[in-house]
Image (tube, rainbow, N blue to C red; front, side, top):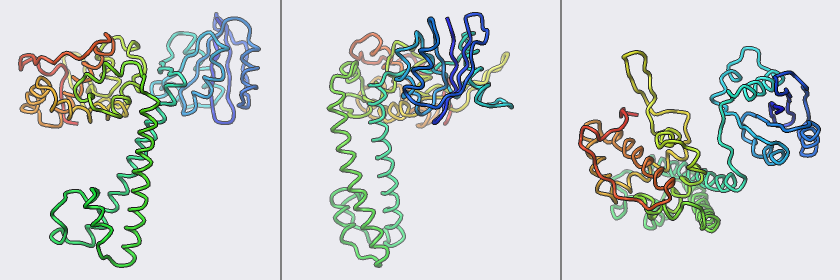
Length: 354
């Protein structure tokens, strides 16, 4: 089978083509464009496989060539250290290295999600961006209040200034003209952000009503009433069958500690960094609700909390929740209440403060 290595960039791409024995057949650089790329791939005869590094726009290239190649392989950018740390780095060498890694079977691969999944992910991630933007605005409003109004002079009939009573108070307080101008602008933008988030959530719900696995995931504590986090878990996971073991899924979610072991020494550190941060955030947020809803998970959390503190206990329980989700989705069944093991076995992996 012929192997094609692609170093893909915004305007141009470099190609390296080698045969089944590893001999060089062709090397070139082309301007990016659908017809230009397809003509080049079609000009290479016989069965072929193509490899490229995952970039922010890899999906555009995949949709262009996926029907022209027998195999499509996506390289994991953080694990391709030979490219990122090379002392003599250029597009031609990068394309050849990708081709050689793919030909030898040593290309560290990333998951290739289909177009529909990528688009739904984009919806959820843009909603997350809107929520973070609104939080930044609210922080600005809170800072403005703190520098103008004493805590003792504020109303005591609400906790958050962003509830109905709080917003009414914010619109009525007397401030210096310049501060009032800033506050009015922040309140208007915050209201617009809230309406936009609600609009996105309604659209997301309509697009994911028949999402595979949603019915089973909704039986898991922490996800029974979830509108967004359950969708994040399913779409960021994409296909649970790609994880051979439950621990692989927990590692992908970033809930496994880093390990530094050699000989008879065994040490663990902070949580792994090469993880899906969207999935990790959704699982940790859902853990708080899961603890309140399930007695077994609550007892597990309390056991770890006594020994390691509340922070590590949340992470350990989130990891336990990820293992539960793995089996629920893979076996396509409803959640079965968690039974707490003896105290000596309550933490499957080392728990360290993060």
